[in-house]
Image (cartoon, rainbow, N blue to C red; front, top):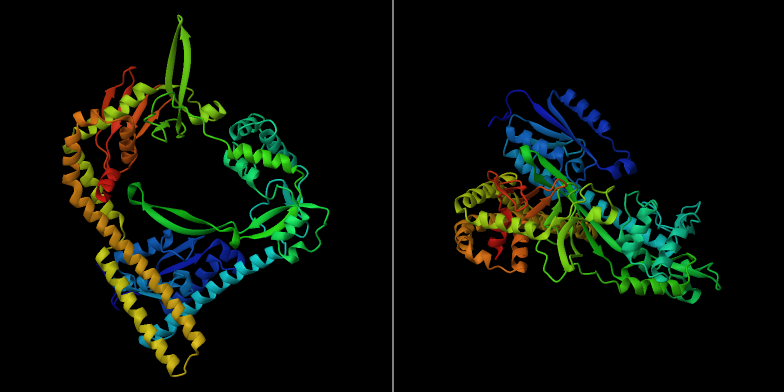
Length: 587
């Protein structure tokens, strides 16, 4: 692998990053960062290999398109330095800075920022490490102060504006309190009336609003039943007396309330959200990036109540609507049978939505017949404007097609083995870098953390830093240790999963081959449904009557195996068993 190693042209990669909130709050811009970096490399005589930018990306993760590009370029060799304006542009977690520095060093590349301390050696590394920990501490304090400020604002009875106010309310001119929106609140009252007085179900209310083309709050096409239930159960729309309100809100929020008035109660801080970006392998060797959100529902003690104006709903109506919603039970469409393709196995091939089970009775020649079928859920609820697939897919042929696909799958052990081996190979190549090298880097990071801890303690003992500063530094090191241990755990778990998968291929084939075909034929409908879920099997029913049965995993697909279903349409079967092997490895 080529490397400059101090000889040849000095080649640099310029890297800039900015997150959306940083740009709005601090004025960071990608152009400003790149201009400073260009000035530096021109002055120092570097040749710019590539300029890489990560717009709108958080520094709390290494899963970024631009950073992945930088790492690929460094792995190709010939890069002298990766340069950023500030260290926190590269990563906001010191442990990630350490990992990148070690990874780049293996390829003869330095990781530098314009705000690095001058010089090399242990003293410079220590100084940079202290700066990183202090910067992390300041960011944590900023987040803590921001949340405290928002909580304090709520305790004073002032609104913390979100993306938009609750439906039926709007912010006043000062942007600190709610007032009733005379144009939107009548719809809220109508929804309560339809449910509490007229006995409508949530589904019936949503269907009525869709038919009347009433605009949804978020601009979507259809009304969501979950949103309507949220309205019914929200204390902001339920009237509370002065005594009930002042019993829960703070004295500051209660000041100025009318003793004769009634109020709704808005609970601020009902959940906490943590966002993390991950990447996955995509067809063609590319990587796709997506954000995962982890929500934690806070306890009532963690929430802050504040009063809002009365929504104008009688208390009896609110309570009646709540009883109606709480008493809702999902009507059974089973028709005296177990639906093997329910819960997302049967999918509309036109729009991708789940198909619903449907039972219809008809009388013909004096006899009563029962017709069982699956139908597109969007078409069922919203009509042809939602999906053109208005065909009822007969249940028995569709379920038979799915089961015949599974029987064919397990009757071809050679094809099964090839699929599993391809899947294992892809699982092995999805991970970035060498797991053993990654493990060594993180272990070195842990050793360095322990060394810093000892040096900080010695500095405190000699009076070079205060004990308050020592606590802050040790806190930052604890966070870095947590990150390193988490990454090590993920590397080990991936390695263990891969080892189980490799060890279990022969056993898996032998186990399921023994079930086919006699044992498979004896499976009950519930057991078949479990097997379909295990395989992530999908039956796609199209508007022209064709049906495609396959497992929607992109890797390990076999040649198409085609048969003719009972009503004369072709069934295309594709084989891929990644998750089946994973499930077997876990058992």
